[in-house]
Amino acid sequence: MKKKVLILVLTVLSVFPVAAQNRWGVTGGLGWSFSCTDNADFDGARPGFYLGGLYDVKLSEQWYFQPQLLFTRTSHRISVSDVKGFNDVYSLELPLQVGYNIPLRPFDLRVSGGVFANYKLFGVMKDVNVESDLTSGTSKVTEGKRDSYSIGGRDRFNGGAQLGITLNHKHLFYGLDVKYSFLRRNQEYREPRRLLFRIGVGYKF
Image 1 (tube, rainbow, N blue to C red):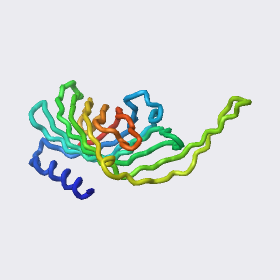
Image 2: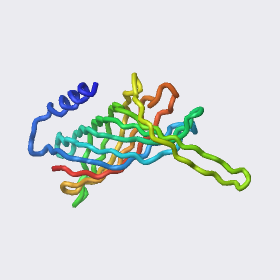
Image 3: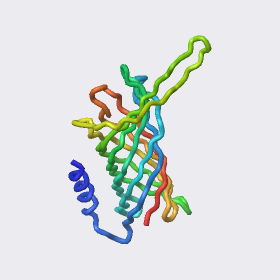
């Protein structure tokens, strides 16, 4: 399956001719994932990260198309029956965005939108035990061990829509993205759909 995902990415990138106005780049940053419902079992965002590459395709003076390939970690608190702790999911992500450039000398502001596909590689669960002292009214938090777990079936795949703004200055750019998942991340626990906010920086060669 990993080979199929890589072949898909290379196919998408290969359809565009290498031209002077098209540029490769790298990007990375932090992200926070929030539940779209009031389900407390899956609430509580923790910072994640993303890191990867991109290819910036100039369609016209203002319009651009930008596929990316990212390695990501999303994280949140989980509390389902006897499972309490933090859940980290590591994935490969393929965003496809169309953007419109607005010149703001000496910067360019790009407003973009598109879709993304997500393929989950594996997860890491960290147990957290909370012991409450009713006499003093205090609580003691003890963190347990981190256990890796595999992800199978349809839970591996996800996708959604995204919007973003990017401030470009020569080779550097600074971005803010908002992503919405179309699918639930965990079908077994009926985990709610999530909003993901990301801030990051990048460099185009």
